[in-house]
Image (spheres, rainbow, N blue to C red):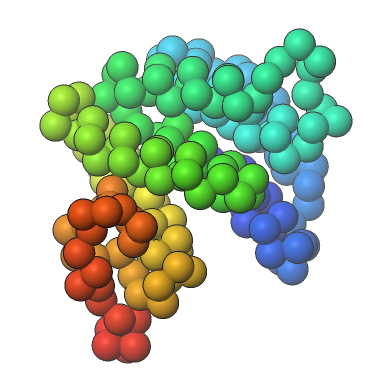
Length: 172
């Protein structure tokens, strides 16, 4: 996951960190050795992320975004939302804000209906923190303020969203 995030973040910053792109190929090969069902859809999510980021490496018969959606569902069925972080990062790169919002909303909504696997509560918390960071980024871009406290899963353009947000300057 760290290798994939390093490559994706470097691509987003136009290569400012000079992360070698071959790391993504190594990550993809490593992920292919893991059982996708046993590891909550994460290996397929990683592979889909690589195919979206480097389409020349994608097999012609594969649609990476469908693989990504299936990977998220595999994880959700097991109470593990880790593939959602990979998907959110990919959709950030694709500029699909509505899909990112849907992933964050789905994460929030499934917490009560599909509780996290008790053995992996820490990873589930990491997912929430990562999606909170994505939400904060989106809120800041749109309003200049972060996600409202206890507002994960709501967005500035929702008809019933209160705009009582935390100003970043106040935090500093």
